[in-house]
Image (cartoon, rainbow, N blue to C red; front, side):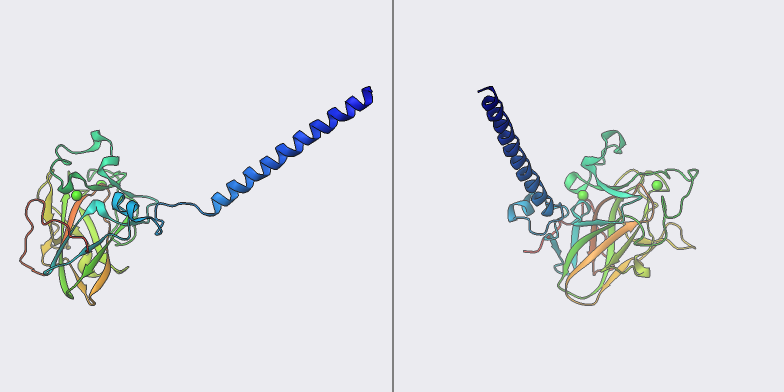
Length: 261
Ligand SMILES: [Ca+2]
Ligand SMILES: [Ca+2]
């Protein structure tokens, strides 16, 4: 009798162990399946609802040129690359103590982006080429925007920026993976500590930049990628504007961004 009881107990224990192993296997299988289909931030299969809620980094957000002009909020970039050393951060992710006075209140759309960390704040800080400064466009912290051009031709590039010194006031602009000479070394000397529109190119002779020299030539109508990349770390970027009118000067927040219908 005792032996029968003992055998029965062993049977029960083995049965429970077997069921628990089977459950465990099912859980492991489920985890593996979920890992095979990760949901990433850049997933292009996102629903319409997601697109509305997350305009930033959505490749469905296309700005459209109309009547030879187009504007876009800097914080509405759809892609960021080469971020190992420096990265663009949207202002609502930056510690309030690190935001210059009134920079949010006076920014278009009350947001901007900044390249961080900023290790070269003054001229006395160590210059590290390829880290906190680069004269090579497309080398560090590239952000991209999709722009639909209805008209081909030359577009002058204006950027609204806020600098606090001489080491956070330069940037590069390019298009479709190319960085033309006319997009190198955008430079700001005026308007320290307030948002300032500029379209000037720094040269050896003129460190504060010369006008009418920063532009992109659009050869085909349709959607193109407009890129900006780091020249100096700490750069603060509110908005950009492309215009075919060489004499156009943006004022205030500039014109509203227009998204393709
Ligand atoms: Ca800097
Ligand atoms: Ca803005």
